[in-house]
Image 1 (tube, rainbow, N blue to C red):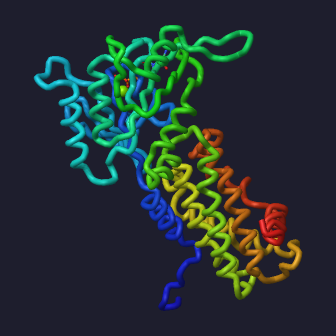
Image 2 (image 1 turned 180 degrees about the vertical axis):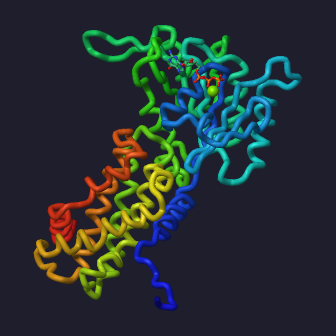
Image 3 (image 1 turned 135 degrees about the vertical axis):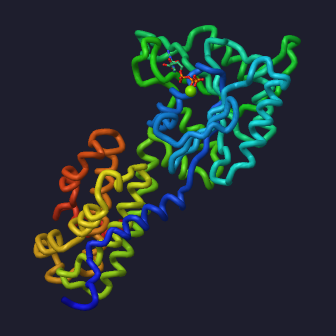
Length: 382
Ligand SMILES: Nc1nc2c(ncn2[C@@H]2O[C@H](COP(=O)(O)OP(=O)(O)OP(=O)(O)O)[C@@H](O)[C@H]2O)c(=O)[nH]1
Ligand SMILES: [Mg+2]
């Protein structure tokens, strides 16, 4: 036995470090959802973020009528209208809530507000107007979300239409006036009609794509990536975030193989690839650590990057031979990243169960054609 224990190449630290770095870099997106009880706040949050934070997240009853739920990428301030019979007006109550929230840490501060009103209420109450003004005066971008829209479908055009009363409500909201015809300044930035199901509790809902697009637009610049990660409706946004992670890892792998590595040492690339995989998992909001033991994670990286792949494939890769040069290392890493991205998408969209990932990932290990394809792309400068 040697006195110095040899450092195992199967080391999961790069994965754990990569995940921790990515989480702190992207941070948390905080949304305030304001509205009366039963207007459909929780249903909206579940539909857009794909999880019921009230069930799975950490909940914190902040004060009566205000709850804060959070996980790594998402924080929800669930603010339930106002208390009837209170000595304070609705706007004063809300001002109190906002003051309390402002005293919370920086990573819990509200980025965007969804002010929710049932579409078929057909009007804003004076309390709604006062509360929206209060939010806007606090500098918060407010989206007025009309919920539970009972759409009907034109059988000829296939277009969806809101009921007449709701359409009139929307027209009024475009240019709100009081009973004397005087223009009202209310302070919401957008009006969006939504539903999360039809009246039979079925279907996927409507208006949610528009809601996420507007929420992203109104998010502060440095919170946009956190929102892209927290939401679950728009997959291309996640791909856009993941691609630069792959490019950076491929460049790092090329650097590591600037002096060509013997094939048996191809495992040197594992830490780079594991870090890349961790960052991609964070973008897809997937906690691999809960599905795979840390040693299984390390194994995964070594297998993807390592000896088995390298020795079996490299002989077949034009110009590779018995060493891994910079071009091969970059291509191997890029192809691994693409495979991992596809696997994460499958988990994210529920096509692969996180519990089954142990058996599933091997199908996403890049093959010879993927690696050669990446090398060709690099030569062509793409
Ligand atoms: N028809 C229809 N029903 C909906 C829609 N969204 C929510 N609901 C139903 O409305 C009820 C209330 O929805 P929630 O999402 O719990 O409303 P909430 O605002 O979170 O309610 P509280 O948390 O109790 O204040 C539930 O029974 C939902 O199934 C919708 O778009 N259409
Ligand atoms: Mg709720």
